[in-house]
Amino acid sequence: MKYSGAPIFFLAVCLLCCMPVTGVTSYLGGSPQMSASIAGTNEFTSGDDAIIHISVLNSGVESLQFVMKGSIATDDLPTTAKGVTVTLSPGDAPVIVRGDPQSAGDIKSQGIANVAISTKITADATAGEYQLPLTIRYTYLASSYQAGTDTIQFNYQPVSETFPITIKIKPQITIEVLEAVPENLNVGGEGYLNLKIKNIGFEDGRKASVKVIRNGASPIIPSDNSVFIGDFPRNGTVTSRYKISISGDAEAQTYPVDIVVTYENRDGDIVTSAVETIGVPVGGKITFIPGAVQVVQGSEGVIQVTYTNTGSSIAYKSQARLSAVDPFTSTDDTAYLGDLKPGETATARYQIRVGDTAVAKEYNLSTEVRYRDAQDISQVSDTFNVPVKVLHKPVSNGLFPILAAVGILVLIGCSAGYYLLARRKKK
Picture 1 (cartoon, rainbow, N blue to C red):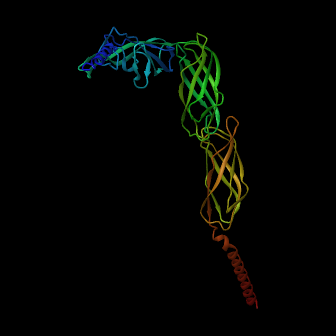
Picture 2: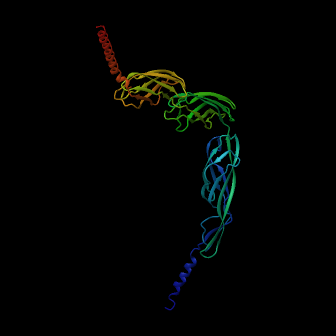
Picture 3: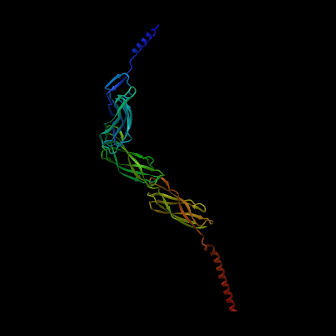
C-alpha cells in the first residue's frame, strides 16, 4: 500500500518522453534576386500616350535552413522583398514619365508583380531603340537574433537596384502645317480652310488621308473632314481644302482645330499620326451701322437710313427691314441694299408717319439686314437700333394762316380807305 502510486508516476514519465519534439524552421543566408522586364509590347510611335507595363520578378532562394527546438518563428523570410516600389526615369530617351513611383507591395521568392507606368512619347522623337532606367527599391530580412525565449531582433536591409528597360520607337509620319488659310470663315456662317502640310517624319505613308478634327468644344466644325492624298513620302508637301462651319455663338477671334494624317505604314498597318493643333482666325458676324434720322411731330413722308457693312466679308443681295412701333407707323418698311463690301454704305428709304402726340425726343427703332454669304446661304444680322429724333412742330406753321388772313384784311382795308379818300377829293 505504501508504493501504490509509483506505477502511475512511472507511466507519466514515459508518456512525456514519448511525445514528439516540436521545433521552429529557421533560414540562414539567401536574399531577394530582383529582375524586371516589359510585359507586352515595347514598340511605340512619336506622340503616343504610352502605358508601359512592367513585370518585376523575385527569383531569390534560401541558401540554408534548419530546425531548432525552442526557437521563435520569424514572420518574414530573407528572400522576401518587402515594400517594393518601382520608378521609371526617361534617361536620354524622348519620353515623359507621368505620375509617381508605383508600389508593388511585398514580393516573395518566385513571386511576380506587375505595374503600369503612364508615359508620353514626345512628338519629335526619332525612330530607334532607347533604354529607360528602372529603379526597384525594397527592404529584406538580412539577419535575425533571438535574444531570449520570447524576444527576437530583426535586421532589415534597404536595397536599390536599377535595370535598363528597352523600348523601340517606330518611324511614322510627323506633320508640319505650313499654311492654314481661312476663306470666308465668319461667325454663324460657312467657309473653307485651305491647308498646306509637310511630312517631316521618317516614314513614307501610302493611301494617306489628311483629316481636320474639331478640337473639344471649339466653334470650328468641319463639314468635310477628310481629304485623300495618296502617297505622302518623307519631306513631301500636300495641299487640301475643307468646308467649315462656324457656330453662331462664337466671337471674332482665333480658335483651335486638330490635324492628323491616317496612312498605311511599311508593315501594312493603318496608323494615325500625332495630332497637330493649329489656330484658325474667325471673322465676326457681318454687322451694320445705321445713320441717325430726324422727323417732325405729326409729319408723314420718306426717311432715309444709311447702312454701313462693318464686317470682313461681302453681304450679298442684302435688304434691310425697319420695325415701326408707336408713335410711328409705316406702309413700306423694307428696302433693298444690294451687295455691300466691307466698309461700303447703302441708303434705305422708308415711308413713315409720326403721330401728332409723339413726344419730342430721340427714339430707337429696331432694324435688321438679311443677306446671303459667300456660300449663298441666307443670313440675318443681329437686330440693332436706328436712332430717330422727333422734333417739335415749328411755331410758324400754326400762325401763318392767321397772319396771312390779317394781312389780306389790312390790305383790303387800306385799299377801301384809299378809294373813299379819292372819291371825296373829286367831289
